[in-house]
Image 1 (cartoon, rainbow, N blue to C red):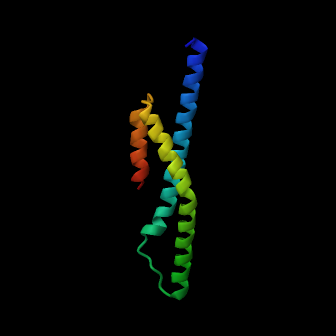
Image 2: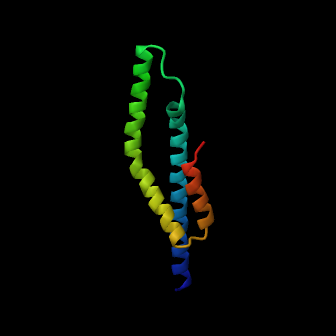
Image 3: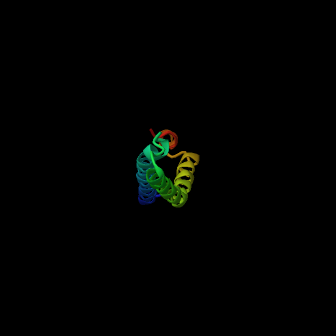
Length: 103
């Protein structure tokens, strides 16, 4: 390969890596945003509050259904980077794990 081809490959690798980190950060933020509602011990005090909480949970379920595609794409992208022995594979693997265990 000539130098400009190597530079083009490096640029593509960097763009894919940046895409991965941007999407992983978005996924972590989404999970952090939704977690309090799903882990709350507040089950409502009356019928209206229970119905309100149920609607919020239903909204999260709808969002999750739509977000699953993004998560699947992110998992495939990160695994592809690791399988191709990307220079940042160690950090990519760490980011995969941190997405699973967002606090």
